Length: 207
Image (cartoon, rainbow, N blue to C red; front, side, top):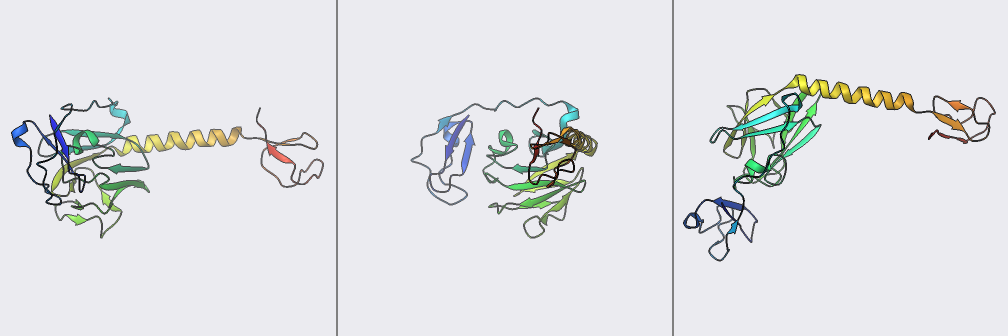
């Protein structure tokens, strides 16, 4: 597979044969004749995830290619972000196209001022005008005109959140403080030691 980048707007183009090289950039109309194609791997290796780790999956409706994403509070999709192995073949998708956030048990999508926009559902609701638009299971996410079927595993997301909260609580419970003046260990960070009355002498216990 060959690749060229427009030297004006930096859009990427991929093609199988040299005679398929585009003459002009579809993004900015700049000529591409003078740019030498670069030979690249047909596919980038993907990290294999267990099903229990996959929270979001996007299926490209034109090719059937899938993008699997583990849980994160914030995910950026784009040609140089999450989903790069599929998105980098699609010049209409921006380098950082949209942001997906997990808010109050829902995934919400916001367009990141992409060139061709981000839209949700059959009504193609604009995710720049309507920021943090709710993304639901089996809905269609349009990156520009490119359709991606969305699969959401909320059980996996909630399990991950529960584990994170549990780990944070364990860390908090394990935290202790010690008065440098008298040596008493406290369960909280006090300004005044209730044992010796020293002010500002309490610090985290590191051992």
